[in-house]
Amino acid sequence: MVRMRWHEPTKTYVARRTAQGLSKREIIRCLKRYVAREIYHLIRKPPSTSEVPDVSTA
Image (cartoon, rainbow, N blue to C red; front, side, top):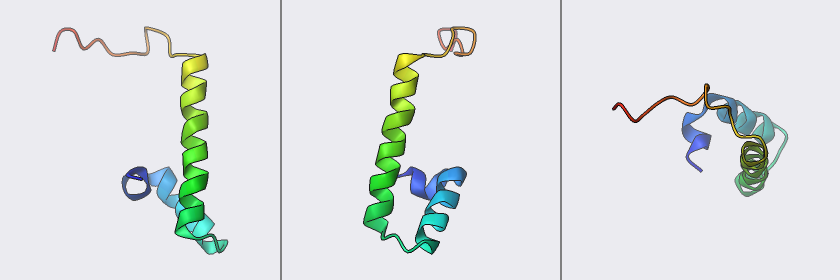
């Protein structure tokens, strides 16, 4: 997963899980579950229109 390399909170999470003795495969499984929860919450409660930048002028 790309975010294991670039996303700072994810890098911290991976380091913590590695220290706990989890394999890379197990860490990726946990990350996929976390990403699925993030997406679910965005679907259930999308951000208000004031939080979304207007890209029509670009």
